[in-house]
Image (tube, rainbow, N blue to C red; front, side):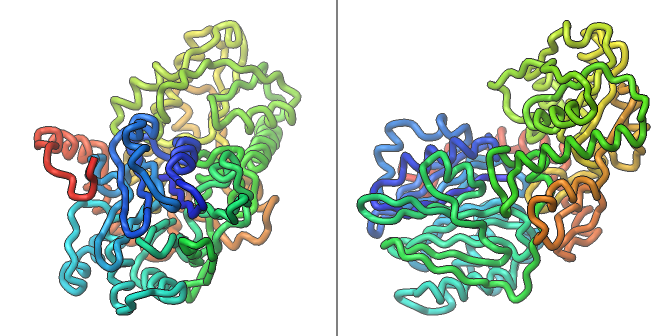
Length: 507
C-alpha cells in the first residue's frame, strides 16, 4: 500500500504535490519522494520519513517545474532502505522517473529477463525498479526520437503483457509529459481530475480522490482496469485501454481500511460503504444473538468509527467513544515487526474508564490481521472495568497472505490462519467474537456500484484474482518477508554503511 500522485500544471507543482502527498500520508509513513521536471531537467528529492520531514524549505526551493510526480511508501516487496524510496529514475530512453503502488508477483522472473535479455541493471530489491525498467525497455524498443501518446500506450500494452500482480503507476518522461496506468484487474486504485485556471486546464492523477479535493481539482473519473492516461507537458490529454483482457476487481481492503473515508473509489463512497458494513454487522448480531445484552458499542478509532455508529443505530444500542487516540503514533498495522506493533498499541490508545465500568461492551474494529491490537484492546477494556467484552470485525477473517500491495506475506502471522472465530475470540480474550460475512462485505460495496465484476478477496478466501499466484510463490515470499526475515535483513542493513553516494539525487 503506497500513495502516488502526478500533476501537469501551468505553474510550479512542488507545493501542490507536497499537499497531495500529505493528504495521502495514511497510505505510507515509511518514506516519501518527489520528482519535478523543468525543460529537460529532473529535480529529485526522496528519503525515509514523513512528508513534512523529507521535504524541507531548502529542498522545495530546488523543485522547479510545471509537472511532477510524488510517492509515499510503506515497504512490501523490497526493503525499508532509503535507497528504495520512490520515485525511481532511469536516464534511457529520454529520462523517466516512476512511482508505483502495489506488488509484482513475477518480479524475480522479470529481473532476470531485464538482465539477460533487456541488458539492464537493477540496483535494488524493489519491484518498482523492475517495473520502471520494463516500461523503459519497451519504450526504447519502439526507437522513436519523439514518442507520441500512441507510442507510450504501446509500451504500456507490453508492460501489461509482461507484468503480473496488482499495480498502479505514475511516470514522468522528460520533455514529454506524465503517464499513469492501472493493472488489468483494477486491484489498486487510480483516479484523475482537472482544475481550471486563468492560464489553462491543469490535471492531476492520484491514488485517491481526496488528494484532488484538497487541491481544488475536480474528479473526472477512475482509470479503468488496464487503462492508461497520458498528459502532455502542454496539457493535452489522451486515454487508451491497453490490456487485451480486463476485469474490475478492486481490493476489498481499500474500502475496509486502506482508503480515507472521504475518498471515492470506482464510483463508490468509502464512507457510505463503511456505513453499510455496520448495518450488515448489526443484522448478523440480530440473526446470531437476537436477545443480546450489549450495553454500549465502542469503536476502535479511527477507521471503524463509521461502521460502529451505524451498527449501534441499527441495534438501538448506545454509541460511545471509549478510546482516546494518540495521533502522533502511525498505523500499527503497517509497522514492521511484532514487538514494535505491540509497544505502539499501548502508546496509541487509552481507554476512558467511565465508558467501560460495569458494562457489556461491543468493541468494533475494521479488521483483525495479526491480532496484536485486538488482544491488547480487549485487555484494556477489562482493566477499565467492563463486565463482558464482545468484539466485532467489519471484515471477515483474514486467513491468507496478500501479495498485491499489502504486507501480509506470512499466513502463520495471521491470527485467523487455521483458527475458527471462537478460537480467535478465546485467543484475544473476548467473550464473543463476531466477524462480517464475505457476501455481506461485498454487498456493502456493490450496493453503490453494481458494475464491479469481482473483488480481490485473497486474504479472506485464498482466491487470487489474477490466477497467477502459485503455492511455490507464496512459500518464497513467506520465507523472505516474514517478521523474522525482515528483522534479520534490517539488522544486516544497519551494520552496513549508509553513506554511499545517491546517484540520482543532488541534495
